[in-house]
Length: 418
Image 1 (cartoon, rainbow, N blue to C red):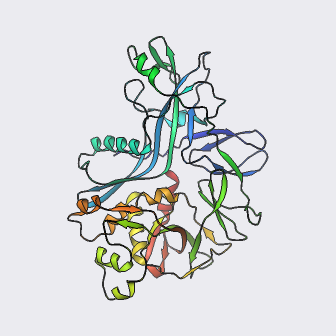
Image 2: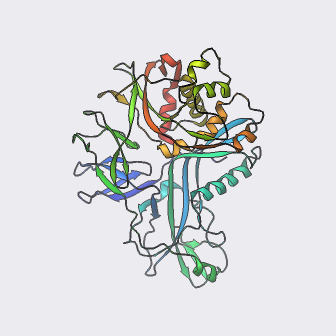
Image 3: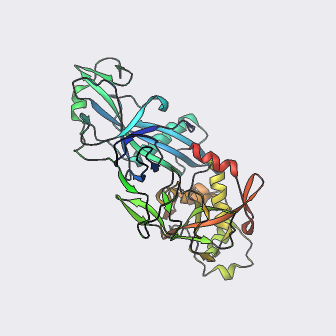
């Protein structure tokens, strides 16, 4: 499989308040302008669109070819086990033959900028969406890892899914790459096929900038640069950006925390499962072969996944989801306590939901026919909310004593490298 690239891509933009240039990591959302000090939350939309900046553009307008970019985790059922890997990959979002199959660029040498109508050139429309791109990326990984079978379920769970446009110049029957200034492909190109490719309609993909102020009480919102959810330390509300405005996030905290605890966020998801009886924790007990002493009491308790709302190394992500889901924290919740230390939410709910089917396989005790079982199962996102769980420092780990669950502090620090 492909491995994660620890060197982040950079995005260049300007402060909407004062116009000063700003340089951010691609996954950054919250930032403060070094000149005017304004704090802003960046909302690039569901699929950010960037273009690679070529210096010294010629008078002719360039052709921009789209590439799907993915960074995050890749999970797959391999035999009777769920395996995962960290992935940083990109691929051409057009039919092969005219443009290079991937960007093939070192991120530290290039700068991304958001696409806007002001950028001259012809932006080609992607020929397929990310669902198809994920299948093609998976095929690329399988050629590297022959142990995996192409018929088994898989999932991409990532914090970065975007489109990146690379500039090319048509010179006669030759297509030149404007970044390294060399022919993109040797020999003449198929002009007719190039002319048949659709172009994007004029559309503004520049991000929305929201002031980092609580819409309810006006206080400064808190989070780190990769946070997808910001919290208000005064009124305790949590907010995420959606369609250029703030949207309140339903959230609670597991009671029993102390002042020195770190509250880790989990997406508490009540799924809708077809093809498998999984509505209550009694159903989960049968699936995971848990002790059945309390089976009758669990019949009326709806089943919930508890998926980390942050990225971890793949094995730890699966293990922590399993441990927290089996822990059954019940309904002993309270409002998120103001002033407590909240770990950033870097994994959106939509991406956490992508892991549910594979996590279901990881929970199952009977692995013999797991591929056949999962092939007939559909897991959809039902009601969901954030649940903050207090973890106490204990040597090199953070521990939730009631559930006997520990997380390495080093693993949390490694999250910054995804």
